[in-house]
Amino acid sequence: MLPVTGMTEVVFGKYKFRTGEQDGRKVIFDEVRKKPVALTPEEWVRQHILHYLIYDKQYPKSLIAVEKSIEMNGLQKRFDVVVFATDGLPKMLIECKAPEELLNEKVFEQIARYNLKLRVKYLWVTNGSNNFCCEIKEGIRLLEKIPAYAEL
Image 1 (cartoon, rainbow, N blue to C red):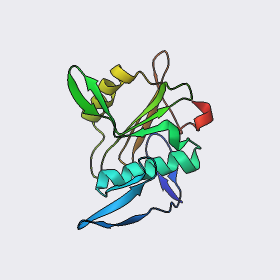
Image 2: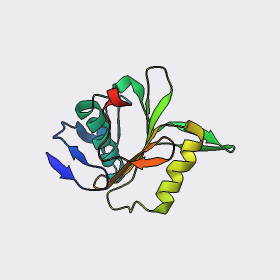
Image 3: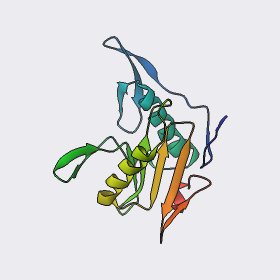
């Protein structure tokens, strides 16, 4: 297991990814979307996050949405990952960036804008090695660990 440092502790396990080549490009099978997707640096981070949620934190695959569009001020935007409660309400919004990208103010503004529409309780920004997860409840509180699904 590889410890990942940052403000919020995340320890990725050893996951069995299904990778291959399709039409001359590298792909990775996404268990949530149930299809192979282009293996970009950002997708590598997203797949680690999905596996971490599913296998380490017991998040049901059926309650996770990946790269779906939402309309904001007449524009179509695309979020990375949203986790839903069993009642269908969104609970966690995750913004994934490529490992070399800095998690700067622009990234936090992006996830905050998306949350104006989704109104989740948890926001998580990650580039794989740096993780910032906060709970929005009478203010914003940075979390030491990612909550298990049962804790949402």
